[in-house]
Image (cartoon, rainbow, N blue to C red; front, side, top):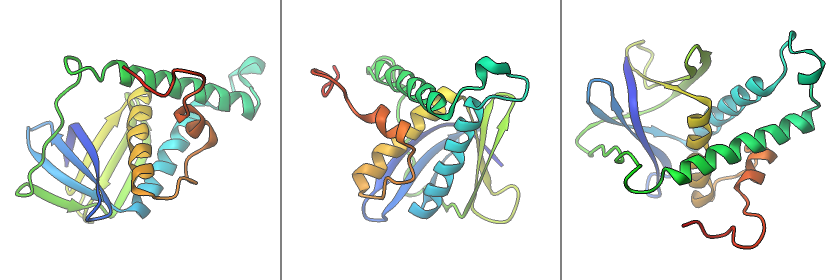
Length: 185
C-alpha cells in the first residue's frame, strides 16, 4: 500500500480521463487514471465528507443547529477561503514542484475508491485491484481537500464533463463577483 506524499492532477484529453501523478512516501512516482464515472463518485463522497463536517452533531446545541441554507453559506465561505489560500500560494516561490510521473513509471487504472474520516483528515484510498496492497492512500485536511476539489472542478469544466455533480455553494465560490474579480495577479 502506498502513502501519497504529493500529487498533481491533470486532464488527459486523448484518454478522456483524469491523470493523477503521485509521489509516495518512499519517493516512487506512479500514474493513477480516473474515469469520469469514478471521479464523479469520488467527488460526491468527498463533498459528503465536507457536508458532514459542517453539519451539527447531536451535542452542538441550538446555535450550531443552523438551517441548511446557513450551512451552505458556511461551505461557500470555507471554499472561498481555501481557494484564496491556494491562489496566494501559487506564486512560484511558494508552490511545491509538480509531481512528474513518466510514461515509463507504473500506471494504474483505478477501479474503486473509498473515503472515510480519520483523525488527521479525510482518508481517500485509490484501488486498482482487489489486493489490499494495490492501493494508494491519501490523508488530506479539509482545506487541502477543498483546494484539490477546485482543481478537479477546473478539469471537469475544461473537459466539458457535466457539472451537475457539484453543489451550488461550490459553483458559487467559483464565480468571480464584482469588478476586477476576473483577473488575479
